[in-house]
Length: 252
Image (tube, one colour):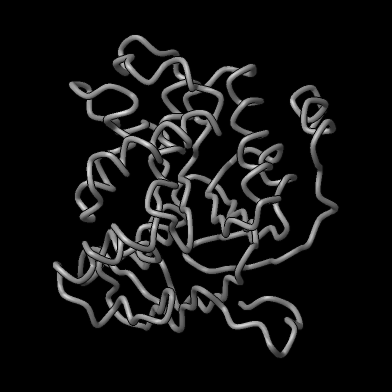
């Protein structure tokens, strides 16, 4: 499934063709992702929804190079992920992809600033440059005063905002988010909704797996998945800026 009538000059930043992921064998074979075609274009915010077990998280992991596909092709920022070895995938994830997970996955022994600095140091930035950009990103997510705090000293919403700052550290082509508000209360969810809305407005490409219609309503494109297949695509009217707050109390 591809974007409806993109401008001829627009090239997709992420493309999947006949993407498949199978688990098991024989009578126990499961087609978690079953022949997916997908294009993601620069600056898009795309939400992927579906019931638990439909394959949406598996799809996200394949697109981000976290898992190997059984077959098919994936290109991201001009590179064929499916043709890369483990070292090449790790480098691509470090340089071109940002990840935000439901469980945050921060390093408990590092401060918020150090968690944001870490991907940049691994990419070869100087400690001074990494510290400067980490401070900028923490300010961007509203945590400029919490850089020295450990994850255990932060609320769930604050930890997720640190995770978003870390995902942005190496200026990724795409940020993938897997149920980014799944562990958050309503107030923290609102903070993260606003943050993703700001990122989208700034031109960051986002692919968000979610079960929450409130998050999907802030996306440019909504894709529905069922039994490993993309079954529907819509372009709902987006909810922007101040209207995001009303979304949390909407009857959906």
